Length: 335
Image (tube, rainbow, N blue to C red):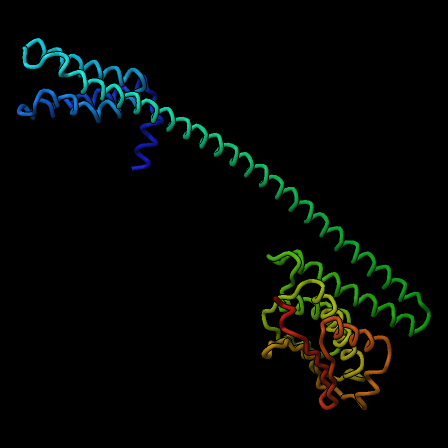
């Protein structure tokens, strides 16, 4: 019904509106002929629907046409002496008022449609502008991500070059570890860009990518596999970064120290939910560690891992046989 009314109001009053008016007049005259027993004083009532609708859709011309037909009918009855002209006056007056009401309704309806069309055009223009701005922002973000990635790669290459020219093993090892940490930040940045919810990182993919880079950089032909078992969990970037740094440090330590003399083995990285906590566990089947307290207090690497655990509002635990480093932190961080 609403769709038909809208289409009718959109018709030109001088064309489509007059066609509707003629159709309604035809229906009215047919009813007039089909009801010969109706008192002649009530005859104008039959023209009432046509008066309203014709004025609404056909404008002034449509309303006048109906009033003209009703007036001719009244004059015809008066000429036959069936009714004095004054007896028809109230009915014709009501028709005039109805025609005026229909005219006002038609104008009001067309004004509303025009306002709606203007708003629709404005909304369409706004959608186009928003779409263009989103495309521009997407291009800018892509360009920024590409440049950041290139900068990470450049810094990593410079550090590797410096490590080869360092002249001593300690400096070279420190520089190479710095490269690995930079690679972890690079993997995090790419994960942030790819994820559907900007600012959050899907950890399963992120950890696999990070461990893949660590394996390529560290294994040097040894038969050491890195196995990742990670549930699909998302963390904000501010928490994913310390988690990634902790993984990078622990996996690198296992690759360097757990398998001496080319020994084969497996480094396993597990991320899972356990009730109200999320557990990160990095273990290996290598030679093991001598004393957990000594390991926890040794070097910058373990200090970094402990600091990362604190940033995750969690705790670091160490098992000796087999070697396993475990960080438990609240699952609420993933919300």
